[in-house]
Length: 266
Length: 259
Ligand SMILES: Nc1ncnc2c1ncn2[C@@H]1O[C@H](COP(=O)(O)OP(=O)(O)OP(=O)(O)O)[C@@H](O)[C@H]1O
Ligand SMILES: [Mg+2]
Image (cartoon, rainbow over all chains, first blue to last red; front, side, top):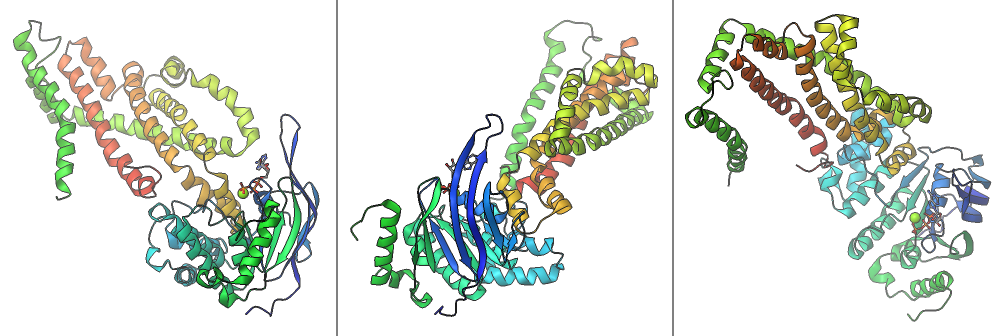
């Protein structure tokens, strides 16, 4: 049960505006209009919204890849200006380095920090075990299935002990069966790791299954439409129970209405 | 099935055209009437090979050529790869160098022989200059393309896991560009090999190209043909010994190319 959640703000978005500036035409594309949001320390926050509403753009900005054209993004009160190991990103396309074995991919961030080989392998193995990849440590990424690649990507980020994990539709590219397994694993892993997670998805079910809170964005340019609290205990967060959980079904439908703008039969 | 069987199969198939050429060469004098200096028999060429092995000239010329190729290869790629990376990574470098490189590319290689002779005189310097020049232009764009083709998400993954500066270079840019860099090494060596032969013919004082062109004066066609065969064989060996294992150990293993 996660009633011990603190309410300290980890990341604060203050009237954040994100635009893509096209160099030649001087034209701008508004991706995120104005978002103000506090991401609490050690919470699992899910952002859900239709394709093109600016979810990836938002992640990029928090990761430090993209500067807001308006407003401020701060972490622990300090402005985010560049990417850093304190904010690990898990990408939809896995983004594993093809020339590194799984274990070296997972140990990547530790290598960057200068952790000695034996120590970083020990840490990497710990996270490979947690993500059920112990047997695959000597493989190269192209020898893994989609689900295994995604686990490796999660292990890589967790092994680097970031303060915040930013996940951009990490399970969108795997089959439905694998996705459910990965979601359950993530619930379990997050309970052990206890870090702040910002998880982006366009799947309402996934959002409610994973999140402490679900932020619904409007179709692009993105704004916050509503925020839904999900207080289903972590212990119940497995698909077998959740599929019949009235609370889950109610919240899922509520979020679905927010996303689609109309009710849907359960 | 053992692993050997398909290998033998490949080997047999690959050898077949060579066998056909040899058979044709052997039969030709019996079918057509021509003076033997135009196309000496296989036997004459083999005799010539044995003779030049015995007097040491073949080894000397081969080593001279290989040494030149190696020097040209190292200089050419030693400049091309870092410069290619700089062009790919820095817009100012790219904007500055692209026009002049495109201009020079059209006259790369053999067209430089006259100037090379004037600058370095007949011999080693001129030939190496031409080889290095050829290799540089044959290889540089592969490096540029290689670096430019590294997916943006990989940069982001590396940076969001704490990679900075030189780490990005060694852990991402170099391995990420390697498919193209190896292709560039291979292509450039093939072009360099041709430039070597041509360069030696015009500006050389020894080497396989020089050996061939000098033999023409004495109508030693067998020496010319011996030179051609050796050039081909050496390239085959270099390719097998150098590039095939290099690819196998890196980009094939990483699943970046299928083989
Ligand atoms: N590099 C870019 N240059 C210009 N416009 C972009 C760029 N990347 C995204 N956009 C635009 O910004 C808007 C938001 O894109 P974004 O990728 O953030 O959406 P998303 O919510 O992640 O969508 P999806 O669910 O399909 O991944 C879209 O209209 C898109 O066309
Ligand atoms: Mg996206």
